[in-house]
Amino acid sequence: MNLPLKVPLQKVTDSLLEEKGLDVFIKREDLIHDRISGNKWRKLHYNLQEAAAKKYSSLLTFGGAHSNHIAATASAGKQFGFHTIGLIRGEAVQPLNPTLQYAVDCGMQLRYVSREDYRDKTSKAFAEKYLLDFSDCYLIPEGGTNLLAVKGCEEILSDVEIDFDFVCCAVGTGGTISGLINSLKPHQRALGFPSLKGADFLTEEIAKYVSNSQWTLNLDHHFGGYAKVNKALIDFINNFKTTHHISLDPVYTGKMLFGLWDLIEKDYFRRGSTIIAIHTGGLQGIEGMNQRIKNKGLQIL
Image 1 (tube, rainbow, N blue to C red):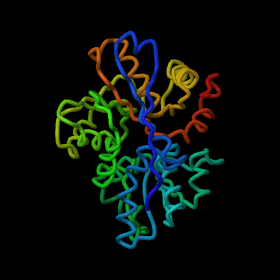
Image 2: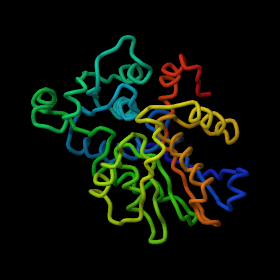
Image 3: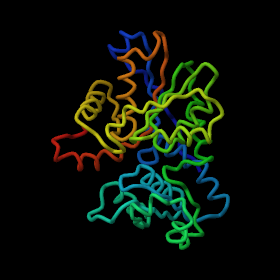
């Protein structure tokens, strides 16, 4: 149960990097698969193997209406022969947005959960209300983060042959950065850029999975919260694509690279440092985001 993994490390050439004396490489995890891309495949890989080994035929997971994880799980289910069920935060809206329409096209069964109930999705009451009907399903947490997901993310840097000082990634539920942290050498450090506002709680979440303290969360580049954007972010994403020919999603990698460039401009990194930025995919969400920001006169190229 594998996808062909050919993940290039792409060097970024930029006048700012030359001025600051830095080498920046982007690990193109987005190229793993058009839908099960980046960290989503890394998180799902060992969970899919576990589900198959335990003879489960169905996968149950959670997410918002624009969730990359929902789309990836639906795609993986279709490709590897699992029935999939998605518990979706919020009310049903017709027509479906591109993410949920894709999930349904892959065969995912959607069930909607009120936002109030969703906040308590780890409670016994939630389980009794929503999960009893799906007791024969393999359960994958929101965002895909669990011990098996972290194990998969520990392999992201396994094929990197250059030495580096920092690895940067976007942070949602904390699984990806946890895997990266566990794979670091003593002189290396991980920088995480949470995509949601008020993400201090992630420090405790990540600490559950990691074996060292070689990491920092930067809490200043969320742009107002999860899936919130503004003109400065959209302009950065579009300029990055025009200049470097790399598409960025606006929820995760776009914010991470905006934050990284901001730190570079502020001389956060010592001269001579080598930085690897992880492109975690999520490009499927661009279509839906463009629908949402069209009335603001914005568009991701």
